[in-house]
Length: 499
Ligand SMILES: Cc1cc2nc3c(=O)[nH]c(=O)nc-3n(C[C@H](O)[C@H](O)[C@H](O)COP(=O)(O)OP(=O)(O)OC[C@H]3O[C@@H](n4cnc5c(N)ncnc54)[C@H](O)[C@@H]3O)c2cc1C
Image (cartoon, rainbow, N blue to C red; front, side):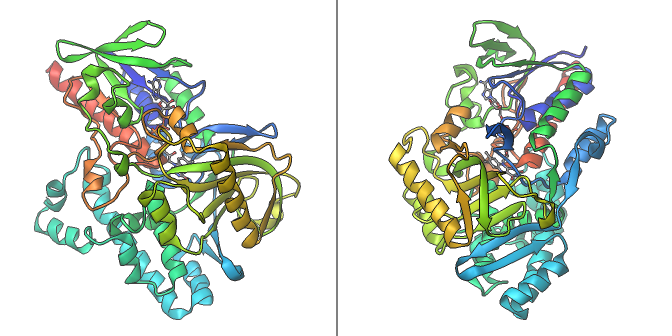
């Protein structure tokens, strides 16, 4: 064995770190406070049926192909995948509906029919620009352990500087979308990609348009639910020797003479180790929830820097009217007001945009047999779960507004007997301590925000961070990359201290 590593948390990043290090010959022990792996990739039961209550849009498949491939597995054989041809169905007032498809030209045709040829051309140009942003940032930012504006600008000599300038890091996503779309509905649709990083399109940099490219590159369904991905990573890590303890919380990361020496669990047990990877949100480290000696390794996040939280309803319900596909978005009439409510006034939006994931459907309407179906209904909310638990009345009002908007846009959900499970920002705060319910670490507001996330390596020898609050950022594949980067940095440090 090369040495002992404790991974605090079995979110996707922790699972990837555990798998990578177990495979490399380390003695790996994962400690998770919940009863199962996955973290935000959790399942909730409604009507006795398991429903994905966290991430539902699976992208950047190549990340997992590589991780599974390195472990000698074929990703598509371990996890049942199905590509979607309709990426999402979008609805606005007045019965206006638009599907986006996996192919750029098919989507451009749909946009042409919806909003005219000029908007279709704008979409083609937008896709080319989003691809350019993605390709410019993939190597020097996404795959780099801790990029800075300077390292990024000089990543490929003078060309790096011009590349940086070209991708408009200083404009907001909303204003950049105005270069391509005149139709406010399309600006709203593509602006929504900022929320994938928990941010407002009015404050996020234009570079977040790379999310649009990531989706155009392919969206898949994991047939047994996203949770199956966590279970698969866990079982391969186990087969490689990693051990897992569930229902146990790490109370303190221990240091001796300035370097990591282990962890103390809430039940008092001490586990010794030379290395610890923390997959808890970095805000929990900064808040001292993992002990004083490691708290100062992460700068605290101000409340106004937090990303979005959410109100989610997990249900098993009958629906009528709107022809649901897997991913459906029902837009509010005033996007600016929605984000002003959330980020400006820290309140639940007066009129929310509503995402509905219909988990018994794909993009083929004929496949759905009818009857009750599993739904995740989500609206964005402020990350104030530690200060404002949203009383029963506020939550009930938000629920009424949410389902009233769905009904106005054509979808009736029969809530009676749907066995609904509501999670509020306070519920997310309880699940992911010190976050206020923020689901994506710091909001990506302003051009420097993406560089302010902590990197995987800390200044304490033997202590590493991994997860969606850490570089390269949130989302299942990005968090997985952070787990991979943390494991790689640990292995490099281990080898260099041994030489
Ligand atoms: C409602 C929702 C919808 C989303 N939609 C999408 C989507 O469609 N597509 C997408 O790609 N991403 C989506 N995301 C984001 C994505 O889920 C996350 O970015 C990603 O799963 C975060 O993984 P992580 O590695 O940071 O770990 P987390 O999932 O944050 O897990 C961290 C783990 O650490 C454990 N832990 C914390 N403290 C301790 C402690 N002291 N001791 C022991 N264990 C501890 C926690 O219990 C938890 O299990 C969504 C998230 C949510 C919540």
